[in-house]
Amino acid sequence: DLRRDQDAKPELETAVRLDPQYAEPWYLLGLIEKSAGHPAAAVQALRKSAELDPRNPDTLFVLGQELLHTGDRAGAIAQWRKVIEINPEHGEAFYNLSRQLAQSDPDESKSLQSRFEALQAQKQIRDRAQTLGNFALASAAAHDWPEAISQLKEGIQVCGGCTALGQLHKDLGLIYLHSGDTKNGLQELFEAKKLTPADPDIDKAIHIAQTARR
Image 1 (tube, rainbow, N blue to C red):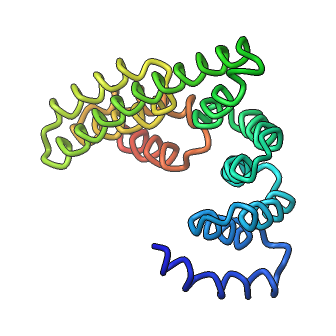
Image 2: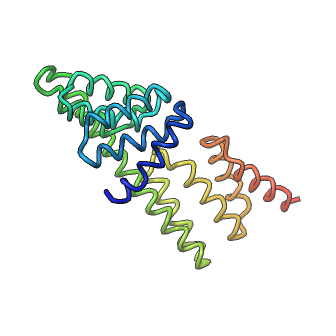
């Protein structure tokens, strides 16, 4: 990986010379310097990327890591605070903040740790629900509609209000349609549309199903 990074570095340096206002090459250069164990150089590149794309949580998170490696604890904390402001579900930022504040502000540290643990629990629920969804798609590929429907229903139950819920309802709706159950298929697709209104595939499937019923 290090050799590949070093091979890519000259191309990225050329890219930032040609277009210094493009954030992505600066970010990638920062990652290369991080991998090479050069935190000061990583900070320099990552700061440039963050100036150009100030609301990119990935850039700010890594910048915080490298600031800490250079001894700038306050700077690292400031970057991670920005990360959780932009992305309140960034578990690693909550975890790192909790660790850094354990001595200076134990109350906030405990609060951040609790939030991290809650996010981890939510992630486990979402992962379990998505796994059931994947099993259901495999069952559907084998035309085992009852098993696919059962697995997706279980996935929806496990998910509760997790972020995978819209996709699970969509998949269940499509599988109902494939199995010949238009009524339940449309019901699930309309539920999916409430959760993910910008998904054009849902509108297309609803239109096809409604047209077929006429």
